Length: 174
Image (cartoon, rainbow, N blue to C red; front, top):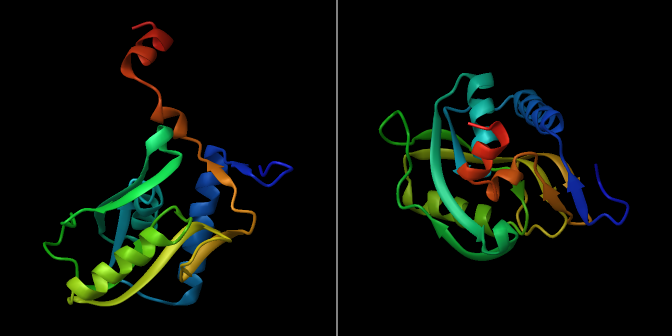
């Protein structure tokens, strides 16, 4: 649900799942056949996992991080992992790069450049996200929702950013 001022978007678990399914439909209807899904951890892990299951393709993972300060609400320096975890030894062929959103586009642009320059076994690379913000400097190949007001997206699992084991023990009285 988008707030009246357009500054916040609150997403339920069901809405999140529906967006992933709609993204799968867009990718399928494009007719593009790919070999591997490469998700950007952490945001792209949930969409990447479900797309991997839907398309029955292997899932590779590349860790990136830029939102660490202020409980994950302030963008900082971009860190990109040196290695890709993949079940097939080396990532190659046609690769679908998945993240949750194109916010500024900085992360996707940097990762795409890194992959194109350093992973020559990748023959074709396309990108997929659930949301693209109006401020994004990167145009994804597949995106479900365009958010021209650039709202902060409150994803259904972000409460775990500040949840600690002691709180769960208290909640469940274990």
